[in-house]
Length: 341
Length: 273
Image (cartoon, rainbow over all chains, first blue to last red; front, side, top):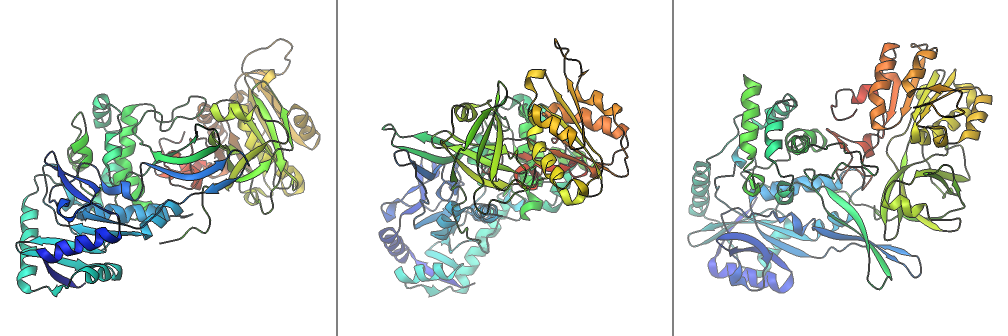
């Protein structure tokens, strides 16, 4: 994989060029935290080392996405694919791994054309980060991203080291900058940052990631589920912020002039009360403890076989967002401890 | 990455040929079988109306019925309430079929015990009619059918036809009812009354969630093996393609791996039954 050096001037020129050609979504500082938003001016963008509270999944899997239109006057229907070209910038390695998992999900079996088209038209640009008190990606092998992005920017003292992930990324970089070959000192600066990052973690999982499916398989009747279920609000915040939660509902509505009906999908969450409730009223997961257990098992066990990878990338967002302080590392470590004893 | 050839959510319109009221809550919706619409008994389709959404519905007619497709639908939710207002000539939108149905080829030469509770008879009707279309390929056929009251018996005339075609049809109602002379009690009370050759039988069970546990216990008492017991499980479904997450039972997706499973396949899943 080729690495280049781009100075700060070159970086701004790159942003300027990208903004002119594509809608660019990147991170800005708001209330002291980075958030993703549409970038209008190069100066707005702040490549933040801090994690975002919301994941970037919304740019590939929008919270509400139109699938079909029905013309109620002539009775005809047409499929809708909203995808258009875009660039997402400021993705941390965990986010890049998460997008890789969503790619597997939506290309599984009968491919999901809405997601896949959007994905094809999206350029992903990563950036380096530092852990906060919730991050634990070093335990899940998602601390580094070697693939799954088009470009990856490492901020240096005097500019950026840019790793190229795809030909599309290389073309984009070369279109707007004159990158130099990265020098040894640049690579050493990247390495030093990685050391610093590794030292910054305050949380980790007490088992290897390969052991986690078995740990969860053996913890189905663990009393912890009742305990955290009794404090869980069932609010769905964990589903909402998770970069790999992709469950959705499909709904219809009708325009006010009654001329058109629209079928669209909206994010849904397995911790919400009605998620597994069928018409007639039977709820297959009626207790919050059952629903939490389901969510945790999806992350560490259920989807692992189906898609060949754990569905937790260690971003800590669910713990960060939880209103009652349920922490995914505490939960998992308690199960690990009891599984080992 | 794989590309989808056509939009996976695009349904096709079908015009209802006939809508027949069966009971207070169930009606039969009949439409001409679209070209290339192949399915196996036990599979389902997504049935929708513009502006009202979609719901998974089992196909009630057999694949051997080439001209028409029949859906027996209970009025239970918002979409099905609107469906029940439709008449012949109206259009519904369908997608599918989806999922895995009953493997009839694995039942060849064997006795089949069908056990239905309530509208569980709907997907089983597809299987029973398919089996009767090739009657000589199978051994003894028995249907145990339980409903709450005689008013809820579905396909009553067909039950008589099946009886004449060689199916041992046995009915039961949950509670005594004026004029009812047959068996009273839940469907499991019929199981000890039938002769089961456990080495050469398969059981196909469809009913409400509460029924499975007791039926399986009773069949276990009769030494029927897990791999010879087929069940169809109901779950909420929104996509039909293993993505939306609603139909998940522990690690499996009902819409893809099911809705028909052998007991063997789901025995280890605590959420299944």
